Image: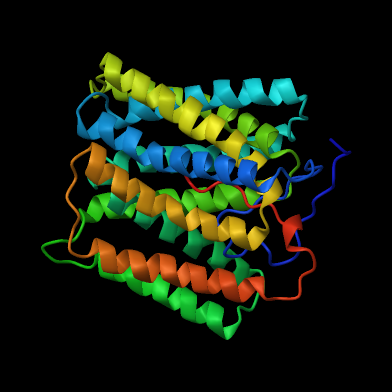
Length: 327
């Protein structure tokens, strides 16, 4: 293989690309079939995170706090090992601690939400919340979307309002609010990590520093007598952290070497539908009457915004390396 190519994130490239992170010194792109295989595996892994969490919590195999702690432990071990094998340089400790707080807030909100909402609904709400957070940060920084981008964002917001408005088929309000908070936390985590060097090393450091926070929460839950764990729950949580998150990230970072930023952003739209399909197939969850229409509005709106942005004259689109979706 030829020498590495250096990647830099163009201004505005991250906005709307689901959770974008610049990765320096990306190797040259793999072949199209390899890229397709890696991309498919990564999307399945990200969708599986919702299913693993919902299976553990909905099935009563673990409490949300214990699941979160074990998930972060699994992710820290897997990503730490990968970073060591790669010889990656860790980010500055101060920045890693700030990102760790955001990561823990995301993981805790994610787990707590899945005690109250189905996997398909949770994945869609999470996806929309991240988009709104990232685009809100872009607006606050002075970015000005094109008219089609505004149309796409408006459609996504309408879909989120349709999904969560009160009614017989509405998701649990507290569960939806927790997932919105988890999405906002992941958006902040991604914004803090953007352009901070090797993506695997950045995530490994954040998972490692989030672990003490998760263990402190676990200790508090134990004092309150709110901890319960079965072997099935432990395995599901560790698989969520080590495989669906840790290895899923590594596979995704390999896949995006063969994707443009716009294609990578559009590919990520498949994660919520995959989670919804998996919830129906493997968990026996029903499809609410609102989910299909809300999915079309949210995911279609994001696709329109991404497509509009992809036509901007920002140079080589391959230089933007989107980070993984929230998982």
